[in-house]
Length: 308
Image (cartoon, rainbow, N blue to C red; front, side, top):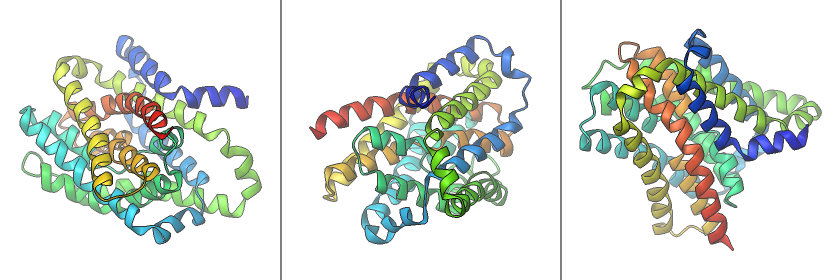
């Protein structure tokens, strides 16, 4: 069983891509499932992340605050600004633009820790940055969306804050508590979590695409191009900023991956919950969920080669 789980987690990008293609070709299979189940599914993924953390993981924040600060600032400055520049440059309509901005304003994705490990990056720093950006997200994500997209649509900042708390923060806290109180059980379960999370992420992507297949096809290649550019620029600028600030290679890798890989499932969830009048706003998150796993796997291979 463990070998199967390792296979699934190692080839996560292909599982996500396969799920996306199948749901695009056969959207009717999952279109009957209510999109509201995405929030509990994301909560389960976040709970699994909480189980893999421990309170000692947060020591990196105090032991190496400079690099955690660099990563978090880059996360909430580079990606939102790049998203805003791209939607203006490509003159995207409001609903597509909103989706791209939502992705840019979300915290780092849980997959970034796995990719940082595969890329021989500083995993402790990656976990610390993901945890910190996630904890900051209830305040910064709604605020940034309001600043960057408030002229396009009405932004319910309080509602978004509460959604992030319920979907992200509370499950992580519960996972941390269980990990602390039941370490034996947690240790047995944790080795299967990467594969479980990979399958859950694949299902969330498939569900989002099945409900947006028609809009995705109507959106054309332009939104795919914008999402790919957003991700690649995040990876590149994150690495460049870390290089300019003189951090060592493993930390540059972690910062690059953390900046480039967003919690795009959360972006799609927030779009469906708070911007129902803009159905195409979920598309960017769905595409990003597929693409950043592919680009992350390629980046890991590149960084592993550079580390030799």
